[in-house]
Length: 291
Image (cartoon, rainbow, N blue to C red):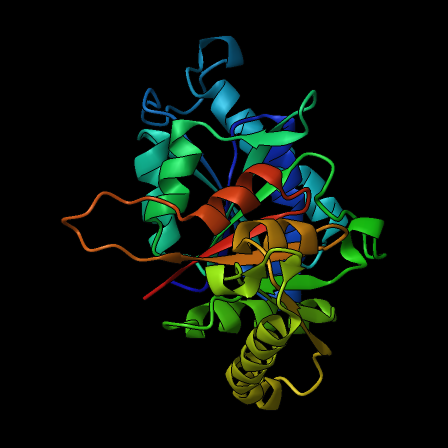
């Protein structure tokens, strides 16, 4: 199967925002865009059935309307529609395994300005074999001109231990495709020995910062060589990694975080950084599985 970017559609404004974001990304990466709508009650296609008798009418309309808008905005972009007779979780996980990335809408709770994800979306994020991008309505980056949300570029959260190759491949590739700068962020809570009665021991914090900067530079060096046109900045924050990442994402065009892949015997779950990013970052969030 040819490389595709898949977006899940359910007819909501959030899923349409996700489709717009996915179309932009597919065009930049020169990939096909697949519009996926899953509904267990789909029936086999029957020719010459009046609309009022067609059980698939609304499912087809969701995909048709999105496709019409996206092809108007991106006339050269290959777009395919896909109706699947299955529950959404199974369909999305299967599609993720066949895609370069899968893009989903994310609903915002306006009173507290946080995200709410249903069981289906959260399960896809936690289980998918490929990157999952979550987009809320109003952050789809419509049109060719940079928006204020996109001005900050791509932010990637790094732990500096364990494998991060897939994470950096996605972050640098996205920054290169979009012509955006990349900001690599590492958050690290201070150990107990850093605290003194009057605050913190600056010699200890300076040593921690210098060591983290050294490791961050070493981690980024081969990727700077691979993507020489991407402008890269580094940021070390001596605070909770989750707080550091959410703070760094303010004004970003995309936040990229990692998720550890789990052995089959273990129940999939998201770590605190991914959880914080999903629930509190205002920009689109990409969750990338890593070994």
